[in-house]
Image (cartoon, rainbow, N blue to C red; front, side, top):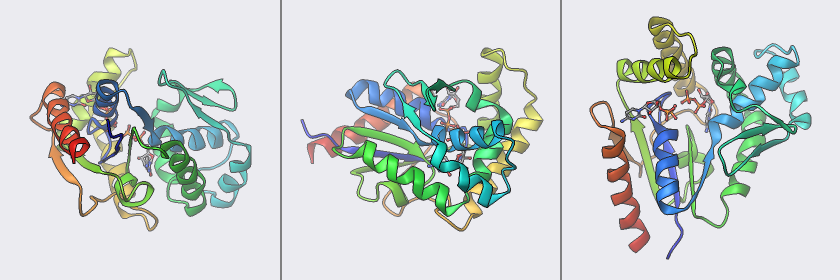
Amino acid sequence: MKKISIAIDGPAAAGKSTIAQMVARNLDYTYIDTGAMYRCVAYYAFISGVDFHDEDKVISLLKDIKIRMLPDGSVHLNGQEVTAAIRANEVSMGASIVSQYAKVRSFLVAQQREMAKGGGVILDGRDIGTVVLPDAQLKIYQVASIDTRAHRRYKENIEKGIPSDLEALKKEIAERDYQDANREVSPLKKADDAIEIDTSDMSLEEVVAHVMDLCEERIKD
Ligand code: CDP
Ligand code: CDP
């Protein structure tokens, strides 16, 4: 069967990675969480005591950063597992700052393209359909209202035992969306040929079923 490449982009907490993982499992494809890679750069700056806003210093760290994304979904940075550590709130905001730097983006985009070559992949992020895989056979732009997204992330945090404040989360998500959509390099935007799915009133199962139908159409083409 033909192995296609699938791009899922959209704002924070729209359900991109959950859907991407479920679809990857159904199709037996490789899932690549590109946001985790930006989070690794921010986390490394954080533990190195480097200010996220100091572009030159952040860039000077890149040569020391080795990221490995394992098939079980765990993320390793220089041989250490950081899967949970990179989800901290300050790392989310840091990722949105360091992702504005062109050299950080080119460093990670090259690795993402290398991992994606050969097809049979599903990548999620902000610039997959526009920059990383402009020739992807299926591009999804997944959105949901800010209230829905903040509630979903809040619920997720509470379930994981992470103390959370709904209003603070909403503010952080809105700030990150603004920063991601307004940066100069590879801003968050819908690719012209992407299919937009508003998941505000859809269950996970409904979204997966819809995306699976689209995948099957493209695989048959
Ligand atoms: O990857 P992204 O930041 O876009 O979102 P996520 O981490 O996959 O999803 C945020 C939360 O929303 C997860 O806990 C999902 O289970 C939940 N959710 C969803 O993604 N889609 C729905 N239709 C309903 C809930
Ligand atoms: O899970 P959530 O949607 O909250 O964020 P994420 O996908 O883990 O991405 C964290 C941050 O990395 C985003 O706010 C973006 O600033 C940046 N990012 C990016 O610029 N390009 C990507 N392809 C993926 C993430």
